[in-house]
Length: 569
Image (cartoon, rainbow, N blue to C red):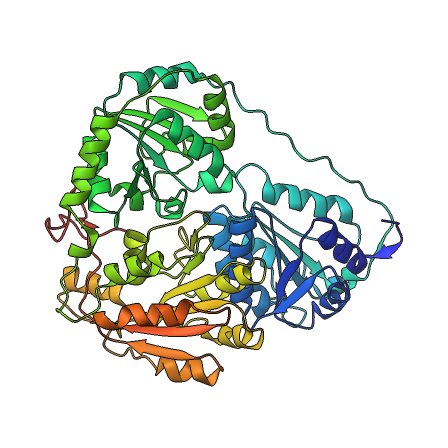
């Protein structure tokens, strides 16, 4: 690129040069000139959504799927602050993403003046975003623009991925680029890994498990992980973000955690060695009571050194990207492993605790576990599930069966309701995969305006709303700890006619209320490549089970065991 061009020209070039083909925005005065320039570049598709939070969630989905960043643009003030939830979602779930906000002219910035605001919509978004970004900076006329953009991109994708934010005043957007340097990509040098120590630990174990986390996805190590499992013959349990790591097999044991599969949590109790791969081992995975981890050999591999010995003190800490660790292990290990007896025990655990028997429903009522099991059986493979936050999130995570290429995207660390619909847009516009939205009646109402974009662009998105006419997960909490006082979850809460809403946006809809309607409804929903909407009506009293009884060890789950304390998370 030649010098002496305006910054808007360079940004348009930068987007195309990085292979970013899709960006997301909600128009505003302080980004209008920037979007105008980008939209003229035929290599870039600008998607205009209806809320900045939606733009951020679309970027989050794009980054999870492609392992490279897309960009969300927003104007200053409310536009910028509306991005923050989605920025936090990318930060906590390690998603590479770039956020660019417009800002008032530099002469309108309050600077050190003792005023709240000088320019209209002036907002210090950089200070707000710094705690949930890897890098956040406001540009000025003297910035080295090329260096800043290159650095921001590298920071977003390197190490543990995450979001970056660039705040650009309007007059700076028109500034000329007269100098600049291109940076070479950072190279990571990990400490030397002693594979022999890990091999020796596995060799003497009788009942080892792998605890697979999101770092396998963020490190692009899915294929290596599959080879590692075949080599070691070790069964693996997963965190919520890793439930789609591999298709179903004898080694894939289930999801652990607060709402994990009962048999998977039992495996943690019974095992004698755990290899943690790319996971921060947070309280939602382990429960609050950690005594179950005593007298087990614990090995932790993670890209972020600060996660080591954080909640659990482990025997072997390996500071490394998961990809690097797995590649070295596969290359150097020549040991033969056989854990067939342990795999047989695990299968017995599974058979003793079928997930469809965890919920008590009427004879003709829809059992969510059964519904999601049947849904996954309709998958053609390479399906992308974008899943919101709430009871439905845990039912489907406990029940879905994944085929090759299927993905499961949800807001984990942030736990943001409203994620699923805009995330589906980010997935659908950048892949040819069938995308299935799974949302609850509460979460769906947060960003339902994006139905307009889906309808207008005839996207291949199938939408499922599990409607229990309540905020079910919090209603369950109120039953457990607040004597059934349903403030805000049933009392004062209501839902619209969702099918009428869908039809108003021009999307065909259907509603089912009984078990015998599921098969035909799923056939209808999944057929074709156009958007459709299915409402699944269930009882408001169905709880999310199994669930760790808070204060108990993770193998003791409700409803068989009772909590010892009020939940702290």
